[in-house]
Length: 310
Image (cartoon, rainbow, N blue to C red; front, side, top):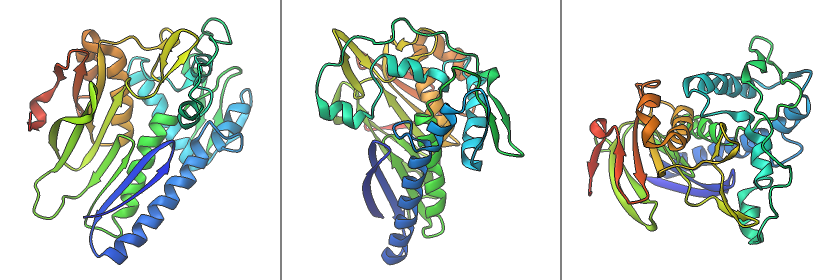
């Protein structure tokens, strides 16, 4: 299995593919180009990105790319499917709690951010005000709505990059900072073996999973953290409060048919925690999940996942 690593979307990207090395290398180059171009489209950290142009267009119709239209259409579906625990309209809250620059910059600056600068959480606008005309790639944001598509876009991009690699490989994997999509199977294997990081000790693996081709995403409240005044923050915003989610779980891993679904439900289940997770998972019977709490206990629908090396 050939591998290639680079940095994009503020995370480490790993491409892995089985096949002739020279042919696979060409696939790696195409996948990297696609990922980097997609980052330029969907990032909220560049004023020149399509997403930033869309956010500035609130109150009028915006002519979008087919990719932007498709991802936003998915996002609207997931808002309903997660009972609002996923909501891309949380950008004002992300900025209010200090996530107003890339995580690379936050960590590089290594400084306390001042207390929340915009007062109390603004009222979250209902997403039914966001209108999409998929036939003409037109999007309408109501006044005051601004979107963050970081997570769902990252998962979707990882899957599209993996599909690009299938032109060059019989089996391949794209891992975009925990958003993984796998196509085919490594030679001689009946599944992909994926090591899961222990959220209580990120230098070691908690366990390994044997998973079929498809998507696997892990979401965690451990790494993307910072101090804002005297308040510890993390990137996972609970749309119901506008604050970093208070949850009994440290991480959630989801196996799903598609990477955007795995990404959305990993975050939604992490916010939901043990009291709400079972009901939420019923909204997506095609997923399986594994959660780790503060005591290192494992929760979730493990019957469809073969745990090894416990």
